[in-house]
Length: 153
Image (cartoon, rainbow, N blue to C red; front, side, top):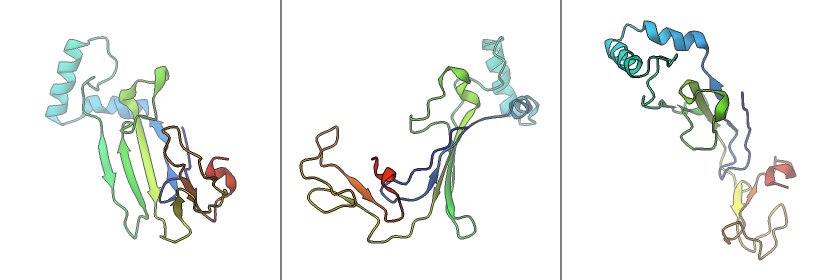
């Protein structure tokens, strides 16, 4: 499982972004679904691709689920199949059985949590003239609770 905790987004909110592979038992259970539409899609898929061991058609829509933040569940959650193109599965797993989970925690809005551009003084003592790879002014994210590695250095 890939696990990253990112403290450098513009809101500096805590994030967890694991990528999981569905258990074989769960994938197999799709074959036994009582849903007639699923059964028809599976049958059509296997008629075209009889050697494919998965009951998931190649052109099946990717999952797109969002669970909103609530007082009882203080995380915003997204369940999908790499909608952001930075969690490539690679050759080790069929992407049809890989699911990306994105959890975003709440962040209190505070003056100290901000992005600095230009000649403003930042926690990393930004130097005028520093630019990003596109030639734009370097953005520096401030979070007083975060150690210097959070700023990329």
